Length: 365
Image (cartoon, rainbow, N blue to C red; front, side):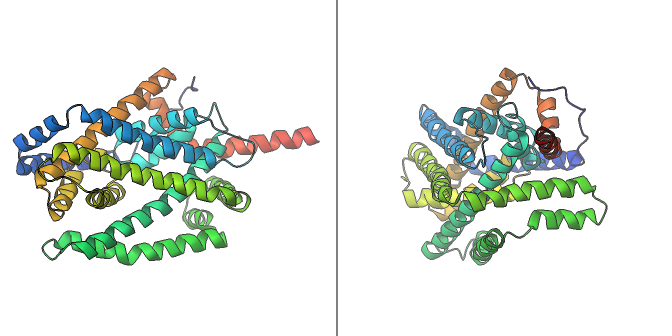
């Protein structure tokens, strides 16, 4: 059972969250109307029982990232696969419900919600490490999709998509090099950034918390090089499952224009870009329909097919959100208590780490 929450922290982002939610809904309604409601409903009807297959494939994505999280623990602490899966589903559900502050809530919530299984700092640092591997895999995946799109299709009629694609091709290699150099050189980018903010008024404890987290991340890098390949393979499986999910969905909703694995791969890379760029929009409402509809047109599908694909993805996300909420209730968490736990995760983790160190010192003495 969770401890009593310390009171809900008022979110400065709430007004913006409302604005983005309303804008997303309006954009969603516009693109649904533009694509044709009857065509979208026809596509959803064609999917039918195939939605169970979509859910099964999407479950693999949660499974492989949960396994990856368990491999990122350093030291004696270990998190079981089932606890990692539950933590991931609960955290993602919380992030989907919160909306605008998604990434600020969903990621810290995952270790906070399984702190009865592993120490909070251990879970938080392991998740940070897993996200580093995920970030590396995602930039490689997006880069591959962008290159494939430019080499295969004429984007002269799609100025917006062409600009985004060219920017991705230009920027991503630089990001990969910088990420490699930072990890290889073990530069203090977390403590450096927090130090900059500390000099401008941020409390010193946040700098100390960041240094603890940073030390754990680099410690894992030094001590566990043999785990790198398995973790990267699991992250690759995540993207492969995404491609298969789109391929399966299009096979049902677009019988007149059968998909190929290549077209599914490009659509999934576009989906990854949308997820990254519009994480703050609840369920990527509207922007997913716009981006997927345009990408589908480039790939010779109808706009209605792209919008239908985006809507089915939302239905899949809503299904897993419901599962996550059920797990939260089953574990005795309210949404407010879980959000508070996520808010204070880093601070609590550092406090737990300090208390453990004090106890260990006392026992030695």
